[in-house]
Image (cartoon, rainbow, N blue to C red; front, side, top):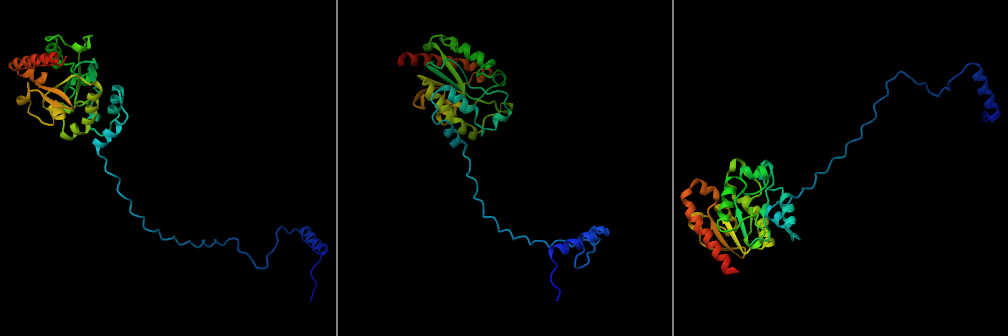
Length: 261
């Protein structure tokens, strides 16, 4: 049996092969370098376990979201910001502008209309169209107005909804309900002596029922405040004969304010 080559003998043999022109080492077995390599065996995919059933997302209740957004809100700017950021009312998508309020927040009288008109939506202020101009003339007749300096003679105006419904349609009951918490906090912060609700929708939001033709002129109570239902100025523009009733309501309001002072 031949003994293993020592280092020097192996090195001498290797140098001799290089001198002969050898450039590759030859393996013990021949290699076909033109053969297509066999595909690597595929790893069997691990059977994916069925995903655990995902529990349904909790249902979003817009009224609850509205109340939650008002937590800790203690001033009008906070109410304005929370209402403007509320995303659950679809009316927001089609309105041009957000319409919050106008007048003196220290006023004794808070007037609540229904929803912005086309002019209100364009200007971003409530009661600025023909109905708003009539409203200003009505209260000027009893020496009150939204631009009056003295708070005892000032009025503060807002609407149940801050966004105009498309084509001036009536707001849906669910739209009124989801925005009612904002109106309630709005009233709490303004703290008027009396509230005037103009139109059926504002009666529904504040008093929980409609029927302005029967309710107008009759003092009610809502949110802990005396409430006087009146016909909306828009209705007075269509029914001028009803202005006599509106004048009687204004005199009733003036008498109420005197009795409360």
